[in-house]
Length: 192
Length: 101
Image 1 (cartoon, each protein chain N blue to C red):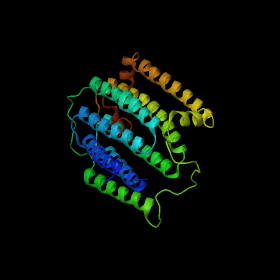
Image 2: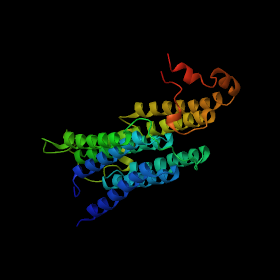
Image 3: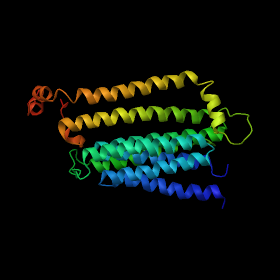
Image 4: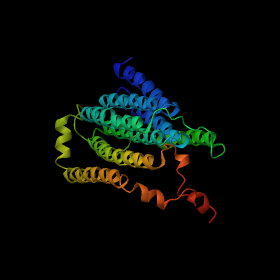
């Protein structure tokens, strides 16, 4: 038993359990905790795959910032709201499970069947070693990929401005918004 | 290569499938959003594993860009959810039927 296999098995089980918890938990907070476990396991897989910097970013951004944001919104919206489990579409759950199983098998088949390797392509001639060190990543990121990197700055700025705009627009015209959509408008319009 | 890259791919496929099922089954819009995040993470894992198999760095750089886009997506998505909740006081997608034809 080599150490990487042991670590892989432990965190594979942990990530699958976390993902299942996320889907099945009734309470959204438990769902967030399950997703947190899955994301932390993902950081461990990144370390196993020589992606040290990406693993650090995963823990800081996903397990830190994004999950904090999720928990914040869950607390804001209300935890004690029970989810309505009556099915609006008949047989929604069995069909969803069957589609999911089909998707899983299709992905496995597409990835593996008929080929001798999962990953094909032009590999690098660089010697093996620590691939994702901060030095290597930054050399590529600020060299070859500088323009996409600067484009992400624009994207993040737009996202921040859009969030502020959403909060502003939905705060002020509360009465006018309610007046524009009278009660029962959705039912009346459904006949057309 | 002590753990074959195929195991990482299979695990990523399983996680992606769980996320897709969660997106189809759950009604709480927050849990559906978390399912999308799980699917993004599963795809990131395939990028990193493939990059290690080929011994190239581009897989990890793709993951960094996916993370940035996902962070922007989470910010805007949660803002929309909060805005909808303020007007409709619900987090269930079944009750958000204002656009039905």
